[in-house]
Amino acid sequence: MKRHFIRTLFLFLLLGALDAGSLKAQIIQYASPIDTAKKNATDTAVKKKVVPSTLTFGLDLRFRSELRHGYKSIPTSDTTAAFQINQRTRFNVDYQSKNLNVFLSLQDARVWGQQDPREGQTGTSTTVSPTTTAPLYLFEGYAEPKFGDKFSIRIGRQRVMYDNQRLFAENDWRLPGNSHDAIRLIYNNKINFTTELLAAFGQSGENVFTTKYAPLVPNYKNLFVNYLNWKVTDKLTLTTINTADGYQSSDPKKYTTTNERFTNGGRLEYSTYNWYVTFSGYYQSGKDSSGKKLGAYYIQPEIRYTGGPLTVRLGMEYMSGADSSTHPKTDKNFVPLYGVAHRFMGNMDLFATFPSDVNGAGLVNPYLFIWYQKGKVLVRMENHLFYSQSQFVYKGAPIDKYLGFENDWRVNYKPSKIADVEAGFCWAAVTKSMTIIKKGGDDTGAFPYFAYVSLKLTPTLGKITF
Image 1: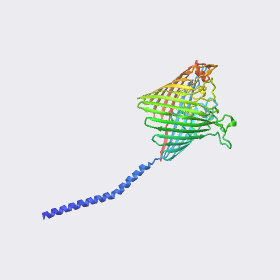
Image 2: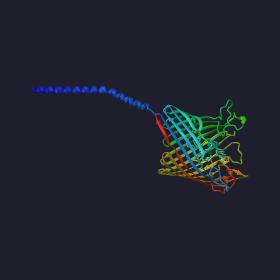
Image 3: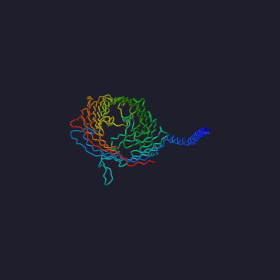
């Protein structure tokens, strides 16, 4: 009896265990499709990478007071300093979505007092460029449809900034800045390769017949650019820029003739540890705006060391020119297209417009920059030596190629992400040669200097995500 009871109990427990295992298997089998569905839904959401659309409203405000006594133009013994305050206001609207970006920027750029606020009329000063007298205009306005993650087309008025901005820049230092009316095909693999094709064609109005172009200020009639940036390795980067820009003949009877200028070249960059080395070079051919055959070049070697808060840059810019005594049939003056000179050739902008600022003699600019950054403060001390690249003859005699020296000091303080305070003091020691080349005679008795204080605010007024 006892043995029978034990045997029965054992069989019962065994059957119970088997039945529980079967039930567990059933539960697992039943739950598995649900878990799989959840996992598949999660994977699908991850793969789709649903990107929300955003609409951002922002301001870009800049106020700058300037004391000028040698900015852009060499002073003489009878000139007095100029003091002024300028203001630039931009209202930006930025729409971002998976398939389309749209950006609008309305801008007002003026010198305080230039426009009478009682009458809303612009002053009659002839010293202000036409681009700064418009009370309000469209600085940027473009749409950028996207075709996948790598390809897009940007159409409309837009800033164009390539490489280190030596040939194409937004020119942020200038009160109005710079933008282009263009169409731009952009490819970016988001890893190590970017290339762009840009095209522009300008007209001064809606023509019924012909394509005669008569802008208020000299500007290209057509522009084509190919930009390429390839990060060959984590240390080596190659950039190329190849352009063609055409200027309509200055002869009214030859408006159908467009003088095409070609600029070809690029830049190599190599960085390792605390060191950075770069070399860029460009060659210009074709014809200049007057129709003269063009053959000019530009090179820039630089080496940079960064150690903690300290950065030291040593380099040189070399722009070709022509000996004034030879009267060559080929224009040898290199023009840095639509780039920025302020950050390369001194903050006093003594050499900012080419070839007029060098009188066709070219320019050699060895420089030494020393930057020190600690927390929210950046101190910069920059030095420039200036030489004419070619021999310049004045009153039948060649002049000394050494033009002078410039020393710039700048301090930036960023108390927050939206605020930047900058103060600068710049001075130059000019020679008789510089005053001759810049068409200022030979008066070197005055002390050229330039000082300014700037406040820039970039607040975001609102952001909508949907």
